[in-house]
Image (cartoon, rainbow, N blue to C red; front, side):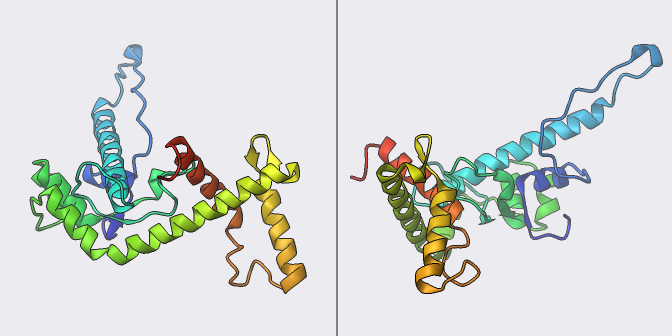
Length: 229
């Protein structure tokens, strides 16, 4: 982890506390056995607990960054997310798939007054104003943001079409939701039959099952908010 330029929240937390492993879950309270003169490794427990709390705080900061990056409103943040694999608004989103720039983690610790931990990530940390960092991020990634927003619109369209198809035929419905697998198989079958296309070609079908699920989630959020204004 020492040589990586981008870290997950749990990796950053482990590195900050000098641990040789990422801290993903809250540590268990040490078991004591007074009869054997064993009172548990409490120093290690406190170290891992602090790492866990740092990991959770970095996750929250990452959500703030992602909400702002995807066009939402909210507080400012210092950290800069450099990669994420899923839609942060989807039910299956895993914060452990987020990568944060090591330099911004150093600035984050420095901003909170922990110069010792800041130096682990950034030898020359800066006490950056969160608002300033947010502005710099928006300017530097304007094209990427636009691309993601266009991608979100396409997911919403896929989700809406799947929902309408499921309402027309129970074959494409599972419970009260569209059956993503059944729809995907039908589309793949027709694509091969009518156009000779396969999923291993650049047809956009290789992730259709997942895209349908994400798209349906996105449309339901719009509906719950009262529809598109």
